[in-house]
Amino acid sequence: VPKTKYHFATMNVAKSGYRVFSANSSAACTELAKKITERLGVELGKSVVFQESNRETRVDVKESVRGQTIFIIQTIPRDVNTAIMELLVMAYALKTSCAKNIIGVIPYFPYSKQCKMRKRGSIVCKLLASMLAKAGLTHIITMDLHQKEIQGFFSFPVDNLRASPFLIQYIQEEIPDYRNAIIVAKSPAAAKRAQSYAERLRLGLAVIHGEAQCSESDMADGRHSPPCVRNTTGHTGLELPLMMAKEKPPITVVGDVGGRIAIIVDDIIDDVGDFVAAAEILKERGAYKIYIMATHGLLSADAPRLIEESAIDEVVVTNTVPHEVQKLQCPKIKTVDVSMILAEAIRRIHNGESMAYLFRNITVDD
Image (cartoon, rainbow, N blue to C red; front, top):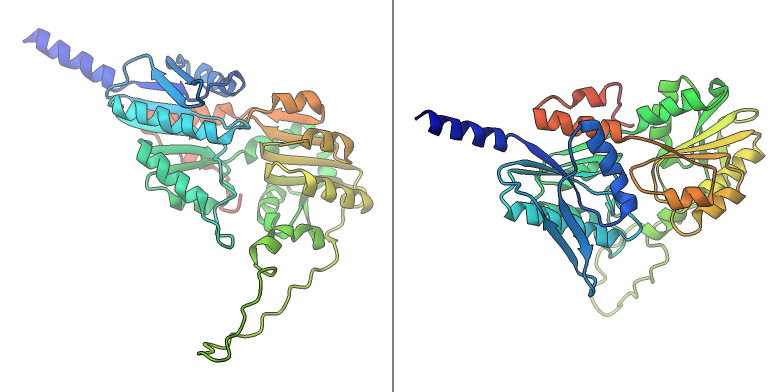
């Protein structure tokens, strides 16, 4: 009988454990996973993720995960679709290996900009949420979703962590004379996030508004669609009110940036054209230094060169996305490490502790 009791006890210990795996095949992307596991004091799970000769994704899990809670860390490199397949295949491999819970740690959630309907497109972010659930994920830890409403696309819990405390700390410690700064929203849509930063730093707020910021809405409103040809012989249907064409205002900066340090805040910096244009406007209005603070530094195409040649003094991003190559091309790019909060989120979820501590002093608009 004692042997039987001892046997059940060991089984319970095994079931209560957790493992951390990396779902990425590139060395640059496993760096964040290594930082997280070092902070947790655990070893990275033994698995092999690779592309076969025909570009199919293959995952081999090299250890037993039966009855355990598994955390899959997936950072998104330039080849976003391969990264998604790696995550889906690994989640499914763990599900079919009888893992108890499968939690995705996806600091930058891909396709998050495609979270609303545009003409005859689709809401791809919702599709991806459904695919992840089908593959076996039971929970997601992410950071600064492009729109907070994306959480509603999922059929399981989503913890949307914030990078703002780390970026605010950087402003306070690394920007000399930050008290003479002003927080800038490069468009009215980014004003809420900028206001949240401004209130916590006790700084002023400026908003750039005008023609250069309206390109995205032009695509969405369908003004260039061909007009309907009215059929005079048949039913004319309902008479809709005449749609007034949008009048683009001239570019303006609402707020005084003269003789100040301008800090532009946003969640994603990818195509830097808008940021470079905003920096030029702020320089013209008298700002003597221009910083950009963003959570996800995608920095696609020739973004590093454009930043280097622009009026921007420094671009500060977190390590949610690997960008070492871009940093070599542009010394203005600086990195803030957020592995600490990701590791703490993993620890708290595993121990069944409240996540509220990670959201202290965080507003809804942040």
